[in-house]
Image 1 (cartoon, rainbow over the protein chains, first blue to last red):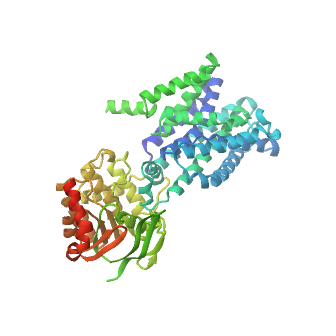
Image 2 (cartoon, helix red, strand yellow):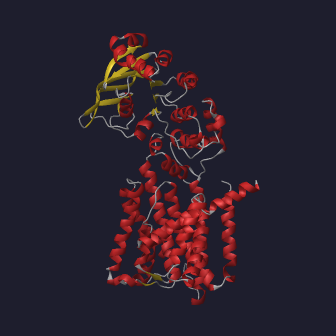
Image 3 (cartoon, rainbow over the protein chains, first blue to last red):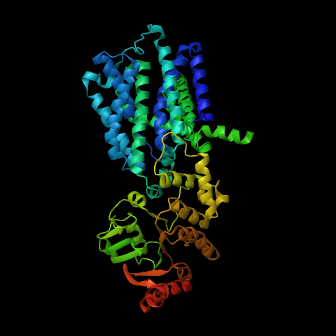
Length: 313
Length: 255
């Protein structure tokens, strides 16, 4: 199987980010880590949106990923980042496997509202659970890496590298997936479910698989976010968190996974800057940006790249 | 000859409305059958029941001796019955080539890869061959939503036939197509069907098309079978002339 342009481009970007890591100021490296962790969740939302499904509840799996890492560290003394991430993935996949049985029956607003409702149920449960810090959440252990325990000052650098590797690894795999038969099945379902059934394929099974896959991505994002910030809280499951992931997909567009990564970074950067400059009105600024995107670039920022490529050709 | 499709006393009701009643049909291997009837006579309901889109209220459907009553469409398709639609069911934003590639990947190969790309040289060649057989290869690169109705109809039928099904059901293949395009379209469609030896049921309002392409006709009226037999015989049947063909003439004059 040859390496296509997307794989090479994403691979090169990952190597560049890894090489640049030690040179970046701490604040930018932190923004990059958080942005790429969140980009993993965004990739899942993108995957579902290409199948015509909008999830306003990916915060559910983001939160499960984060809390699994937090709980395993706090109560079981596990510090290995790979194990903590794997636990979050397993927990999320199990929950998604159960909820997916119900959600794969629903479309459009009903799917969106169900996803939102389940994430809000988790939010409600967490805010009432004293042992997990209720509304305040709790701190997450400092990560080690397959037996290697870096000095405290360099942990964030290692987490940045891990996040780059996981986010770009997943992005490359997902881009290949989107071009596969299963990937195209999503677009086919978005366009015409009846035809897909009459081509001998179970629409529900395809949607189920995509839903579980999106949950796994969200759990990885939540776990990395928890390790990077050193804290988890129920806000991870709140619906506005899920809304931000949808916002980022709209910002970038759904044509390429690179859009999710770039838009996530842009979003975190703008959020950091604007919330610093104007702490009470930053949502207003983001709303204005989204309005501009919808009006002038309905297919997201990534369409700019395609426009330039067409002009160059 | 042996029966490829056999329905016994099929019925379908929607509350108080009876869409089909006592529909018993046997179709032989390789037989080409025209299905006629006024709008609402039960033709599409019959096709929808056979292909699993509707579950019959009562009765049974056997395909090559196997009971397929109530099976979901994807299983009916896997069993060997494919269909086209009165209103073309395509992936509108994708190109004709992508539509055909998806059909090949899903229907002919029966499995979808998770990583292996859908676009391969071999599959693209096969897709273009099918498009060429249906005279629409020049439209391969165009999004389907932008294509003329006749091309969409052909693509809809082409996608249904990629697995060379032994039984093909065509729901009004020429509806919405310009009059002078109807016969060329039917020639294009029926050529490969005859060559493959598949059985075919096609719903049609144009009696000239029925006479030319079908060996046998089933006439529906008010959810029931009014007549079933050789074309000349059925088209001369007084009931058919009164309730089916008459309505066509009336429709044509009114239009």
